[in-house]
Amino acid sequence: MNHFNYKKQQLFAEDVSVSDIINQYGTPAYIYSRATLERHWHAF
Image (cartoon, rainbow, N blue to C red; front, side, top):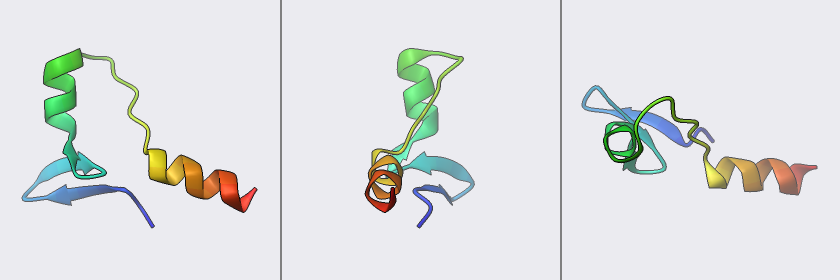
């Protein structure tokens, strides 16, 4: 499952708007999905 999706032409990471993250923290920003990291960890 991919936890980065577009909704109404806006990118979201786990239901959090990437635009909101950038507005709050600035760029460059490295955005990770905790759910994806955990899924990969459990697969390992």
